[in-house]
Amino acid sequence: MEKFPAPNLVGRTGGGPASLLTYEPYYGLREKPFSLATDPRFLYRSPEHTKTFEDLYLAIRRREGLIVLTGDIGTGKTTLCKAVLEKVDRKTFTTFVPDPFIARDDLLKRMLIEFGVMSVDDLKSGRMTGSSHSELSYPLYEFLKSLVPLQAFAVLIIDETQNLALPLLEEIRILSDLESPEKLLQVVLVGQLELRAKLKLPEMRQLDQRVSARCSLQALTREGVSGYVSHRLGIAGGSEDRVRFSPAAVDAVFRVSNGVPRVINLICDRALYLGHLQRKNEIDPEIVRQSIDDLGVGHLTAFPVADEPPAATPATTHPAAPASRTHAVAAAADLSGLDVDDIPYDLSAPIAAPVAPEPGTPYTPILTLRINSTRALLDESASARKWRIRSKRVAVAVSIFVTIAACLMLGEALLMTYYPDPGQLVLPLPSAPRPPQIAPSLVPIEIPPASLLYEANGVVNPLKPPPFSILE
Image (tube, rainbow, N blue to C red):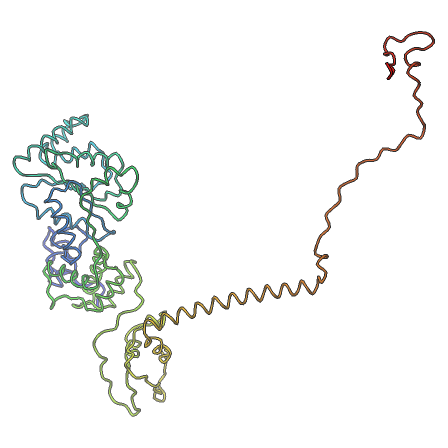
C-alpha cells in the first residue's frame, strides 16, 4: 500500500467544488458525503427526526407565535430548520439568524434586509446609521401588516439562543406579540438543552409563558446510524458495489458517536479517507478504530461479534475440540485490557477442553474464562439474581453491625479490667482559691470616751459633733 497514492485526475477540474474532492472520485462520489456543512439535502428522516420535523413545520403553519426547538450538541438542529424552511411555500418570508450575540437594532436591520424592506446598499451607504429603535421598528411593523391581506406571514429563526442576552430576549418577546388580529411573526428559538433551564428562570417567565410549541431532537439509534450512513452515501452518488460500511464498522461508529450526527460525519469522513489510501471499498472495524484514534473523539475497546460462523480449519492428527463462540471472539479481536463482562460468548456451546499444542509449536494463551461459574450466574432468572444481590447486601450490613458491636464490647471489657472502681474514673475538680487572710493586730487600741473627743482641756472642738445619749 502506497502512503501517498497518485492523484486521481477525475477530481481535478481546475476549479469549482470538484477540485476540492480527495477520496470521493475513488468511490464514485460526486460530492462530500459527510461534510459538516448544514445541507438540507442530506437530512436523514429517521423516526425521531421525522416527528420533530413535522411538529416544527405544523407549528409554523398554525402560526403558533413562539416555538422552541432544543437538542444536544451536533444532533442536526440547524439542518432540520433549514429543511423546514425549504418546505414552506412562497408566501412565507423567512429570516435565519445564526449569531446569538447580535444587538437589538442589528437584529431589526437584518430582518428588514432579509424581508426585502431595505437593501444591503442602504446598510453599506450608511443610510441606516444612527437610526433609532422606533425608526427601525415602524417599517418592520408596516411590512408585517401588509402581509395580512395577502395571507402571507413571516418566520424568524434564531440559532444558539441559549447564549442570547436578556435585552435581546425581551425584544423577541415583543416581536412575538405583534398581532393584527392574528400573529404577524412566527419566532423559532433553536438552542441546546441549556435553553430549557434558561427559560425557567424568574426573569424569563413572560417569555416562557408565550411558548406555544416545544420540540426536541434526539440522537440516532443503532438502526438510525446505519440508515444515516447509507442515506448520505446515496445522496452523494455512492453505490454499494463501490463503497459500503460493514455492520461491525457501523456498530463501532455508533458506540463511539452515541448517535450524534456531527461525530458520525467526522468518523466516517476520516474512515473513507483511510480506506481510499488502503484501496478498500468496504470500511471495516479496523479502519474505524484508526479513524477514531486519529480524531481523538473517543476510545473503542472491542468490536462486536460478527454474525458469520468461524471458518472451518483443516483436520489435524489431534482431535479437535468443539469450537465455541468465545474462542472465535478471542482469536478475531484484540482483547487486551478488557474485563470478562465485556466479552460476549455463546452459553449454548459446550465447554471446550484445552487442546495441547503440537510439539515444537509455541503456545500463548489468549484468555482464561471461568465458564462454569459465569454460566451459572447468567442462567438464573431476574428475580433470583435480584434476591441474590439483596442477600449479599444484607449479609454485608449484618457483618458490619456485628463488628461494631464486638468492638464496643471489647472496649467495655478493657475498662472494667483496668478500672474496677467506678470512682477512679471521676477526675477531682480543682478547689477554689482561699481568700487572703489579714493578721490581727497584737497591740490593743483604746478608744477615748466621746466626751474627751468633743472637749479637751476645757476647749470645745467645733469640728467634732457632741456626743448624743441614747436616752435623749
